Image 1 (cartoon, rainbow, N blue to C red):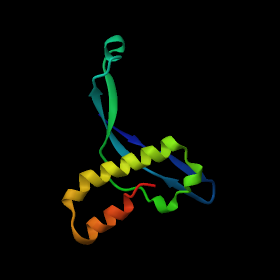
Image 2: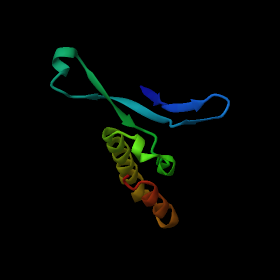
Image 3: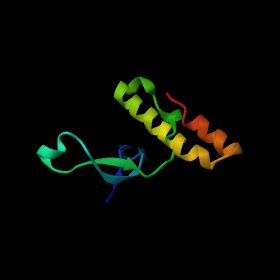
Image 4: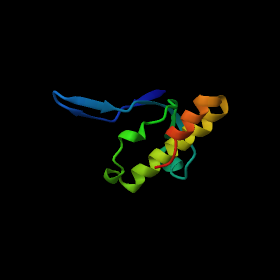
Length: 98
């Protein structure tokens, strides 16, 4: 099953910003699975860098920074082998860790 994750902020009558990713629900083997049944986790399907130029890092918690850096590392690892030249250069800049 595919699910969308769409966090956002909206200013009534002004503007809004939303990040949308598609996620695949996949089974995961964990110690808790026996007690609670099948456990699921999400695999990100949408691999597009999030524009960090709009982010005020001082407003993020450490776990949010870690999530963004891990997401960008995944985007880079999966897409970089498919790109070259200007496209690869753009990806490398846009997926730098915060």
